[in-house]
Amino acid sequence: MSRPSNDGQRCKNDIEIDCSGVQINSINNSKHQKTPPDPLTIAEMERILSDMIERFHLQVAHYFTFAFLTGMRPEEIIALRWDDIDWNNRTIRVARAKTFKGRFKDLKTSEVRDVDLVDRAVNALQAQKRFTYIKAAEIFENPVTGRPWHDERSQRDHYWKPSLKKLGIRARRAYQTRHTYATTALMAGVNPAYIARQLGHANVKMLLLYMRSGLMPQIAEGKKQKWKPDCASIHHLLSTIFIK
Image (cartoon, rainbow, N blue to C red; front, side, top):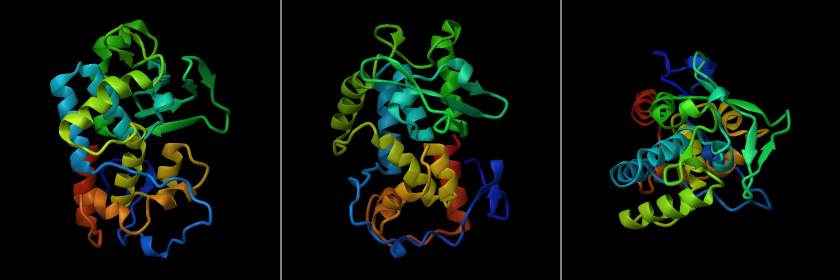
């Protein structure tokens, strides 16, 4: 999901950009739907990351920056190791998860995926190197214990919740970093099939929840308004949010 080419149609890794917009009003709700996503606005994301940099150990900000900019599940992020990274191709392999009991679980072959990394995600990894790279184990660790995160509860309870409360942002699960990534990418015109692959979905069906009328405009501006994307706005969104 890097910067699109000048013609606004394709970008790195053959990601297709649809400059005509997404037909969000034509999507029918299924009879039985999961709980709708509750992503944060772009402004809220930036405020949270700024607050974490200011108040907490830098490793906390690195973790949540990576979460926001990859859309990976918390249990996948805490299981990542340094040798999962392909620095040349700017990807990271998701091959395992860490359960709530702190145990590793290998993903099925069909579930293993390579996630493309945007500039800010790569920068977060580079900044994290000085803390855990020499240990040649998990990338992200608890800065208090100096050991890999046991599960996703500690960073949620000690950093995520306090940050949202201090900033006056409505309480949400830390899992919403994943939904924020997906919605922001959809707003930018990134091909839904590509986003689904990044997130580890078998198809684009889950993305229909993000594209319902009224949700995406709230993410873009923090208020409801009709969203009419154009190539210029797509270039701006990608450059300001994912490339930094």
